[in-house]
Image (cartoon, rainbow, N blue to C red):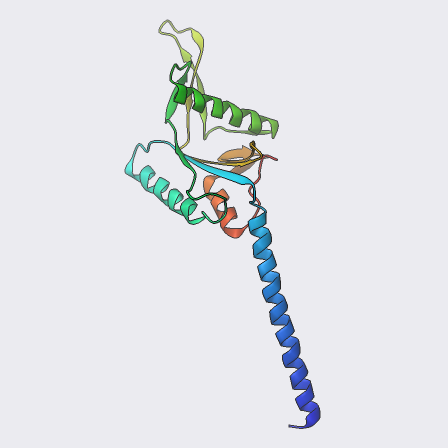
Length: 186
């Protein structure tokens, strides 16, 4: 090998080393920016009682995927809440009323974003025994729901429909795994 070829080869090696080092730095900063986008963001997974073994297995898969993402948010434990399959208003039970209030918050946020909660959440007016409509309502909750909050504001809700697009809990988990934004209401 001539001295000129040796210098060219050394230059290529040096350039390759700089490129590899540059890529490592770029990858590290990309990973840091992905985790930074979830700073001060609170995630909560809501699960209702499963009515079949198939639904229970589905919830377990969702719960495992959610737990595997615990490095994404601050805190020691994955925030998982249990809620009711259905709740009727007006309820004297404080925990049922809390879930009704949560539904009302979801409804308002999705309405403001131009979306809808149906068919994932159902809201029905109850009828009296005489066939008259009453002011009472029954709310049926989905098998799983994932909320995204920032500064106590709801900025993401899965599942829902927005602009003709379905946002599922699985979509949110996929986005979290890929380091993508999960705010669909803001």
